[in-house]
Image (tube, rainbow, N blue to C red):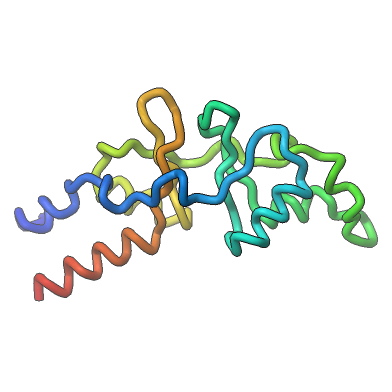
Length: 146
């Protein structure tokens, strides 16, 4: 059983750890895979959120997903990058949190994901919570408790 201080720490809200939407690289529905790959390469991220024109979250796309889509039998078919759209390739099943969710839930989701998208009650993209930010908060907490 957790002691009260640890329990309180894990129930803290994630709001202060969120990278705001305006600082997060993303692509939109309707973008070509070529554009998505350029965003991924320029940002140096392996995956980014996919949003619509209203900034609602629809999924995520990664370099691996794009490469799998253009992988031919004998070679990578780069010429197909502009033939496919982001929505043809993205993963719509991604974890999401609200700003009011607690650190424990965020920690649970970050086990299998490098970041978790944060949305408001209308599904509008607020930002991301990175595994790095969660681990830094846990590390800081543990350092001050010992």
